[in-house]
Length: 333
Image (tube, rainbow, N blue to C red; front, top):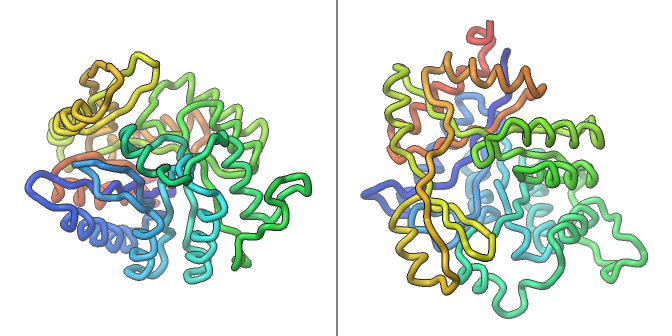
């Protein structure tokens, strides 16, 4: 079985390197990904992170489009709770007009950072009490120019409009998110690297396909490949996530103890931290393929986005090269 494969790149700042180095690595990775035959390349949005350099996906996307020729490039994703749907659509319409058929708009529900950075993003009136569902609905209405007459913004148009509508993807890890995407007629990406509960994945798939059977349902997985199985498993075992649990019930994940220390210095609400291993599909390309085959067969998935949170730049690049074999009919036989 051959898959369409995409890459989610967060522009990780590996030990001993700078944010500039991380962004240069992103450029090199997408240029190689295009040669290797990856379908899409998405960049993320994180704020006030010591480990990740990607803060403004729309800016980075424009640069990457200029550095490549054909690969689809998108956001994984724009954290819509911080922004005006109108401005987001304007930005992505313009990107699409400059590079037709190559731009994708992935939208996320999380804040993408600490409480203080969220406040900073909303400082001066950028944020409002509008729910995420309403923001997402309005964004799609601006994309398709379908604002209802009773909408407070009726008559506003996100110009210039692209002849080819920008594809919209909602990112989520729950059946509720899948339901929202399906009801809006948008594509959905299930973040399996965040929530690897098979029952929830199955419910999300069924919910989405019951409402919107013609939509695209993609699964984003954490994966690392090496020539030797034991080497891949050893490297993957070093990666940890630190889960921050607040008394109010909300939670947040960070990638290093340094980020936890920074968080303690800023956050007023009490919380506790638990080290959490990441469920990562790690092994030889053949082993990774076997695991993806299981997911594809069980949930009728024919497209995956690969997230490789390994803090060794050379090994990470080699992993993406090895995983590109999964799109080859030779390996699929």
